[in-house]
Amino acid sequence: MGTVYVTQIDAFIGKIDERLTVKAEQKTILDIPLIKIEGIVVLGRATISPAVVNELLDRHICLTFLTQSGRYLGRLEPEVTKNIFVRKAQWQAVGESQPAIHLVRGFVRGKLKNYRHSLLRTQREHPDIDLNNNITRLENAIAPIEKTNNIDSLRGLEGAGSAAYFGCFQQLIKTSEFQFEARRRRPPTDPVNALLSFGYSLLRHDVQSALNIVGFDPYLGYLHVERYGRPSLALDLMEEFRPLIVDAVVLSLINKRSLTLTDFTTEPLSGAVSLTKEGLHTFLRAYEQKKQSNFKHPVMGNKCTYQEAFEIQARLLSKYLMNEIEKYPPLILK
Amino acid sequence: MNQTEYIYIAALNQYAYCPHRCWRMFCAGEFTDNQYTIEGTSLHDRVHTTSDVQRGETWQIRAIWLKSEQYKLIGKSDLIEAESGQVYPVEYKRGRKGEWDNDELQVCAQALCLEEMTGQPVTTGYIYYAHSHQRQLVEINQELRQSAIATIESVTNLLETGAMPKPVYSKRCQGCSLYSQCLPKATDKVKSYQEVY
Image 1 (cartoon, rainbow over the protein chains, first blue to last red):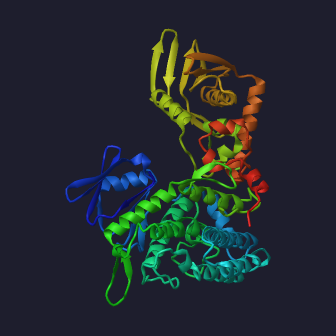
Image 2: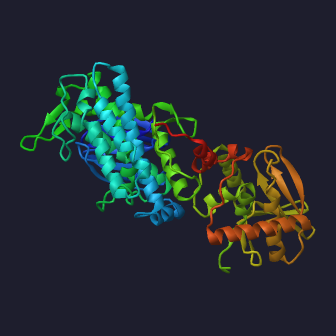
Image 3: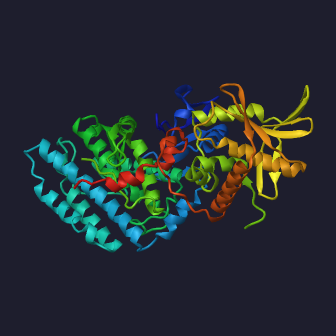
């Protein structure tokens, strides 16, 4: 068990002894031991008993509120850890410092290399489609990273690499039902973009929780600094995970036809697309399953889940900033 | 040196076990329970209810605060016994005699506090191992005193500077409840890691 998602409108979240219970329409829909819960995400409206609030704070379980469509509203957070040393190191590296440049290189390299592996794998499995041009463009964005010494230019490489990847994303979709032209956000106006946006929103919550556990201030980042009030470090650290988790889940649900067009609704006028209740459940199940799947951590060499990997990467990030390790190794999986 | 800050007697034991763990617990404020610490805590819960009884010739006082102004030490004792005017500390431990015998340090630190509090020399103490129900005598000799005082200095210095001792991997890491926070092997693993293209 990891994160509990509460999607029922007007659900009641309570507790009995050491167990969390979720009730909706006079029925108990969930009853699990608190010890198994790492986070709670509420989509839409729910009532939470005061006893649960105390318990969550006490156990350092994060409670996040999203709108029905997955837009982030806010969170209930326990006291930040007392580990002031991590935050001190984080603040000291701010700006165009050598450690900040090193980390931004790592975040960008991690994401683009994972993009590249994803395209190479698709190319291998489907010789009928030609992704060579986009793979080359990606490689051209990856190659100069190590020699680039300012963060703005690194942002440019990240943009170029992402454009190359999303430029052929349509070819990764194996069903004619879904079309993808380009990344469209706020609001997403087609099903594929709606899934990506929703997935990234969940991922952000998970990465932010890991950063909090390790002792970071999630609002101070290195790659993402353009706007205050955004959890920049969470956005930084989630870059390498985007293709590994969210893109993989979205493509698998679409290509296996676990989701069809009937799982989406479109708002009038704005054209904003979102998941229906059933579609939402399908997506959350798949996302949670992906997070709990195992792989061998390429640096540490032990088996871990993606859920655990968020924290491992956050720990490696803190160790780099505190001079315990000589480089930050982004999570790159072949 | 800041004269108002005391150090916990328990920190000495942690420092002797691993300076990095001591830093994590007492500087960075991190603590995670594992089976050993939970067993230890429930054992101490039984012990840590203040009381005093007369058992035959022995007066037993449980769970009182010990303090030393000279060494800036503070901590809770498990048990203090007094027999024919002689006081001595008894420290409770889970399991058998530890492989990392840092428990003597704690007993010695308690003895230093007792000497200051009672004005009498304390030459012995005991460690009671819950697993084997046996008491082991600890001689508060010159050598142990020196070693305790040296550790007190190291911990005082650690708490004042907050400088993190680097984690060093050894066999003792396997039983440590802070292993996944510390990841002691990370430095070498990262050094030898070759990132794929």
